[in-house]
Length: 545
Image 1: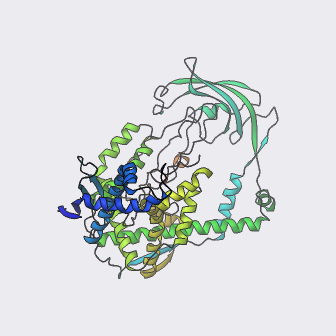
Image 2: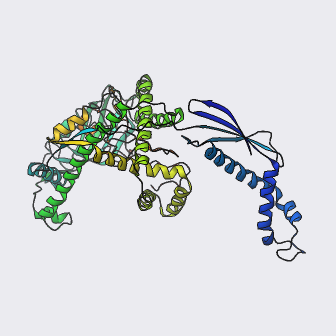
Image 3: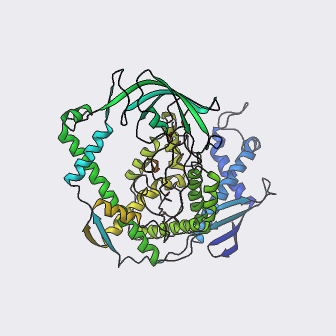
């Protein structure tokens, strides 16, 4: 095989490989010797078919296989001889005019990983902000838990609904006397005073009794997501199916037993463990942010554009998905476009930090064991239906990039934990509010960094702050600002063949007075459907619903 370098510019490399027809033919001969004893042909005893007949019958297929094998071996030889570390999978292309039996000319293009300077970790200093899981926090969590278990008791037929009661109703919404799409529902449960419905709706339901039929008048908000309804007057014909009052939920052994527990002490123990886990996670999030900031500030080196582009594509895909849930998607996308350069900078920081963490891990023997990898694969496979789990496992084990996608978050965690052990850490006890404020105060665009399903929901990107557009509203529902805050979503994971990546998900700012996307018209317009899960990797089996 002949190798000619055609490009050496920055981190970009290109080569031309020439594989001779003689080399390919020698592979065909070797394969013929292997398969000839297995070939069956009328008139010949098993294993006695002449090689020339076997070649005539299977020659083209064998030559194609030999060509593919030669190209793969050629690329691997190139990488080894030139000591190349690809940033992403090399691009390999065969000359368009190639025909079987000829010398093959193959073009190989790739970007290589940069020479990462030895990371400076000798002077890392971190502050560990800790919050005690005290009795007050436990009692607060117990009360919240009890409130979530609120019991609703049917009221007497003569009872008139009050604020705080639950009303179950059927409804038909009309504009100018004509029912509109999405305005009809059955058995909708509304807690009066919750502010879940559009202004004026709940107030007019106060005073109804079971069996009542009532027509109310409302005006849709001017910024309502369904533009054909925005700022329009409407009527709703209501049929009251039931009125329920809140029964007291006592914090006692009975509450615990109703949940399948032994007693209240066991419930307290479980809740305390949950509180401690949440607080420890907040502490780790804050420390990790500070650690990554110190690494980012102390290192600056070129990174492969293809890796940055891939990371940016993941960020942009996430933002576009979120924009579709805004009241004005076009405005949200326009705002994103105005900040494109900032998101490019975030992507570049993520890649650089990923390379730094990879360098630190490799230099110091940080590894993900096969047992840990098997556990990761099993966890990911559980998201698929029974028929696809085996296919998914085989796919991950045969696709290096898919395996890297699963491995990278755990590897990053292990490197970060190793750095924590080397850092000079001082402890300071604070309140939960102070710790959360410290985390939130770091969300400005000052620096930016792989999605973990457990950790990176809190990691920062230093995303540029922006005004939040209102999310799409349901036909008759609005929710409070606190209810409307979406769960933070991590940016999609990406796989790199030769390096781990450190990633902080793009955070979405809290929104003012917004409402959830429309639910099915036949159901109460209160619930928001969760988005479909995204497949873990390309070509992998589709996950179960």
